[in-house]
Length: 337
Image (cartoon, rainbow, N blue to C red; front, side, top):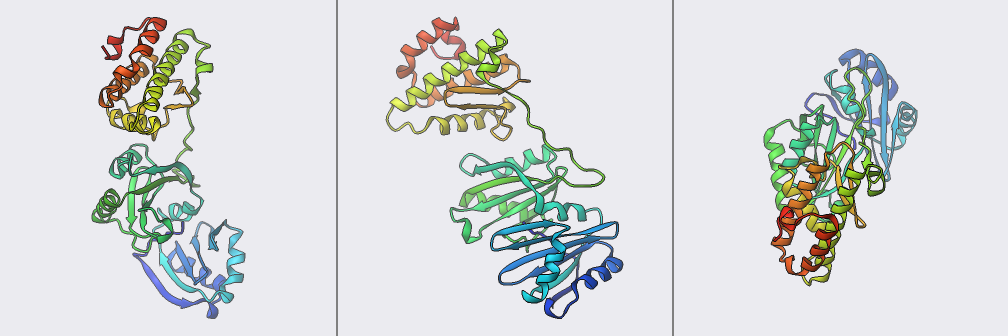
């Protein structure tokens, strides 16, 4: 993604055919200190980000391919005349130049979060809490090629701005712009992807290091937690089987994810964004810093509510009795009589 704040235009709508781009950049480094040169043609888009204290960085997007870094500058200089770019120059505050220059190198943090299960306002709140440096890409509706959507930009959890277009041309720090994007996403649906920027220089946020997961096999090395994880895996399997055997109940993975989202306010580790508790292929997977007792409470509550809401108790009853006898857990503790 190439996004340039355009609230401080210096010179706009020049033709690259008549420009010596290298001398142009050198001149404006001395003239305004930090900023960006934006290049746009029918077949490509590019930018050079510059400041006084470090070498300029370039990014080129052409035919769906992106090239980024200091080495891109030379190629961009060679392309300037042949592509007949429209060229504009914008000043960018020195404390923000590293952020916007690093944006094209952002890497995925959370992917394919659908509006069906994810509230964009809640996602924004979570990214502020996590002190994200990066952005949330918003694709609205079902046709990404149509260009509907936008993005929300964060620096250490602070919202720098948002845009309601795929190219960032309407970037604004206005709260109204952000609310408009949230509201339109709620009505149109869509998909959200979160990207993290690893910036260079002072104040760089540390990379987010995933916590080590505990699978059934790993947890069994410690009898207490291992037994608990296996017991909960079996209970989830019973529920999954009951939904599969019932007609019109839908998909268990979808139902469980919805339930985890509903209960995330009470048990924050159930939040799908965090990835601390997941269930796949009959196996419960948890991060090893979670208390087994808390995991048990959360899973029991999830199963109880799913069984009641989907009328599964009769279908599950015989298997639940065997499960209760095997693990010595009264069904009343699960909340199912």
